[in-house]
Image (cartoon, rainbow, N blue to C red; front, side, top):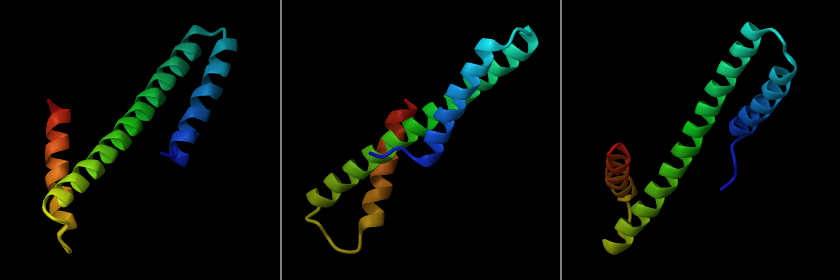
Length: 92
């Protein structure tokens, strides 16, 4: 699975802000940078989790479709069922 451009940009910003924070002596500025880094890391983790969930939904929808005999024109039905199951598990 390829990493999105947005994820690459977040990683670049995290690395850059980390380098800058290392050289900053003012504690207020450093604290602000570290808080921003934490926010960026949280967003990156959220994106990774969403990609993982989408991959799980895709796999589950395929299994449901195959188990139903691969009917034509019902892909949305299987996607929604797989999404319901997968997101339900993720919420628990």
